[in-house]
Structure formats: structure tokens, C-alpha cells
Image (cartoon, rainbow, N blue to C red; front, side):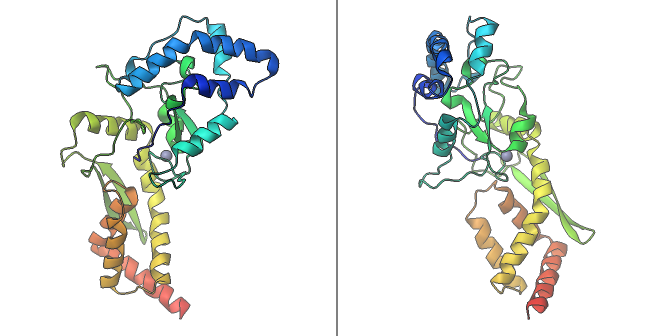
Length: 283
Ligand SMILES: [Zn+2]
């Protein structure tokens, strides 16, 4: 749940770049619609600033005009790619294209936070576009607000991941493999509204399922890393993995998984057995 820094380019400026990439004969049409939407885009920015995106407005434009405007969004447009590059740079300026929701796959799609199907008005608003991986973007669909008119889902520009742990994992050895079963729980008292948003987002985007299915790959990855560092004793394994956990966010799925592995006696035994197999293969 990595926070991204939204760019401050205005929607008008951003749209200008996108429109300049379209066929010349269409440019005046797009520019006119863009002009009609100026107030609405300013209103979006105001709602963004006040964390009130669930109450964005619809325009009075005809469906023909809106359909046409919706065509301006193209995932591979140069302006969109540039935006992606800018917002995925971390605090120290390093480009990190891992999905800011799940932290697993590359963020190779753009999510329209205010859904483009219902609100084509905001299809190229730079603060409405959030880079996500395919898995997280796919199943989200069109949920913007809850029944009680709260913003329903996690927004990586607006939300700050809680520093209290809400993600947990049980591991068990099944068919000679540590199998993870991730779950979320509010035993540490994350703010109720924030926690419900996490819960809804995890459910909609099937985040726990992604964690479960990605975990065995991680186990093998860490086995190789430990072997390459010539680490074979239980004490060294625990200390090395603890260091690895310390560098990560408290709700990072790898950190939570590694912690579950080292606290499970049967998984620890599996790790040590595998390491000794690797050791004898390499000897
Ligand atoms: Zn993802």
C-alpha cells in the first residue's frame, strides 16, 4: 500500500499534451470539450484536495460528446507513460514500477479511480489515474462510494498505509511445501474507516489470493539467497531473515510471510532441510 506523490500538472495542461497526439482534424473538437469540462476538472481537484472524491459531479455534456472525449484515454499515450514514470518514482527519486497496492506485479496498467465508465469526464485527469498491476486493476470494477457515502477504495495518492499491523499469515506444511494463508485483522486498532477501506480494497482486488499464490515463489527465492550467502544454521537463518523483515513495512506481505515462516517449527525444519540439500549439491 505504497503512497504515491500525485503530480501537480493541471488537467488542462495534461489534456493539451494528449490532444496534440490525436489526428489534426479532431483536435478542435477535443479542445472544445476539454474547455467545457474545465470547471468540472477544477472541482475534481478541489474534491481531491479535501478527500471528497466520492462526490465528484457529472457534466451536462451529451453522451456522444462524452463518448468522444473518453477516446482520449489511451494507456500507451506518451503523456500517460510520462505520468506513470513520474508518480512511480519513490521519495529518493528511484523508479519503482511494482504495483503500489499489492507490491507483487509490475504496475503496467492505469486505474481510473473515479470509474471511466460512469464518469468519462475524468478519463484523462492526471490525479484520477493510478498505476496498478493487471491483477489489482482487473477485478476492481466501479465502486466509488459506500452506502453511507464514504470513499470506498484505497487511493494511493490520498491514503497513508497504517503503521499498525493489519496483515497476518498462517503457514502450514502441505505436500512438503510451506503453504501460506494470508488474512487481515484489526486486532491492533487501525482507524475503523481506514480499516474498512483496506478490507474493501483487498476483497475487490483479491489481494490476499495474490499473496497466497505468490508466497511459495518467495520461499524458494529466499532459499537461494540464503544458500548463496552460505547460511545454513538455524540461528543464522533466523537472524538473516529478521534483518530482511526489519527493512520492510509492517504490512509488507513478504515481511509478514517471512515472519510466519521463522515462527513455524515445521517450516523452519523444511528451510533447514532444503538448505542442507542445496549445500550438498553445491559442495
Ligand atoms: Zn497489484
